[in-house]
Structure formats: structure tokens, C-alpha cells
Length: 209
Ligand SMILES: [Fe+2]
Image (tube, rainbow, N blue to C red; front, side, top):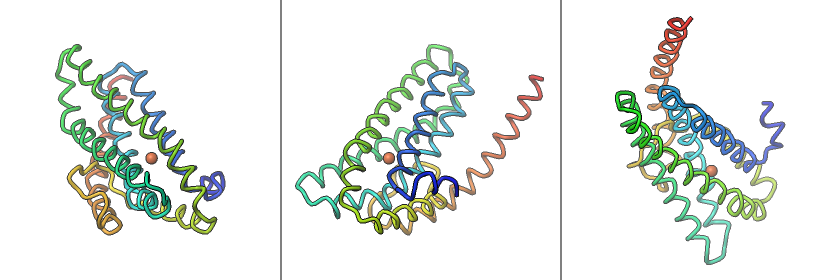
């Protein structure tokens, strides 16, 4: 509720706020030295990025080709979908390998963390491009009514979005139907996992007390 009044129903401010949250997690990842803590941060940004990617794919990216009528629109659209596809594949790689880094030596952990930092650089670039070129262009082409409807779609979409990458899932056709179903399945998995993480971190805190 507070968020909507701060953002004045501007869908692109909502997306930029998501970007800022992810940037903060990236900074945390880089500033923390504990591998265990880095893994917890990776888990957090995977969830944030997956939710954000879903609402862009369902509600924002289709607008690039429907609203921008110049010859560059398809290239901009393709470029954004490609960035998301690559990001999802890398995020899935992190899910598959990050926990095993705890058993690696320091040099090997460093290599894995460099892979994460390369991903971070690529995604920062993607987010900046959206903020500099895509969002202002769409804003200039949309009515206040369309902006308000998009804002509502994004807010609702965040509630039922997938929280895991699913790199093999389609990003264009059928996403409005498929993403809420996948999101419900992910919540079942994440719900248990978050509880497990909470319990294990509580145990860890107790051990350290
Ligand atoms: Fe974005």
C-alpha cells in the first residue's frame, strides 16, 4: 500500500525499484567474504530476478513491439529476451553448483565467485539499458490509463510469478497462463526451502551464541 502511494502507480518506477533491490543484493554479495553468506545472497537475488523477469516477459516486453513502431523495435525486443534467457541459464547453473562450493578450496571458490561477478556485470548492464532506453521510450508512448493498468498487472504479477529460473520454459507464448502455474509450483518448493533456511540459520545463530 505504501509502495503504490510512493510510486504514484508508475509501472516503470516499480520496475526500477526492483532493479535497485537487486543492485543492493549484488553489492552485498561483493562485500561479504563468507561463502555460506554469499550463497544465501545468491538465493535471494535468484528469487528477486525470477519474479522481476516474469512480470517483464508477461506485461512489458510485448509492449516493445506493439508500442514502438520504428524498425529497431524487434531488435530491442529480441535483445531483452536473449538477456533473460542467458540470465536464466546462468542462474540455474548457480542453483545446481553453489552449495557444492562449500566443499571447495579457497581458490576454487574464488573462481565460482568470479562467475557470479561476471553475471552481475552483465545484468547491471541489462538493467541500465532498460532504464535508459526501454522504459522512457514506452513511457512516452503510453496513456495514463495504460500506465495505471500496467502498474496493476505488475503488482498482481509479482504475487504469482515463478521464483526459480526455468531456462527451458517459453518466455513469449502462453506466459500469462503458464507463469502463475509455475509460480504456484515454485512457491511450494521455496516455501519448504525458506523454512529450512530459517531453521538452519537460527540453529547456526544459537551455536554461535
Ligand atoms: Fe528489468
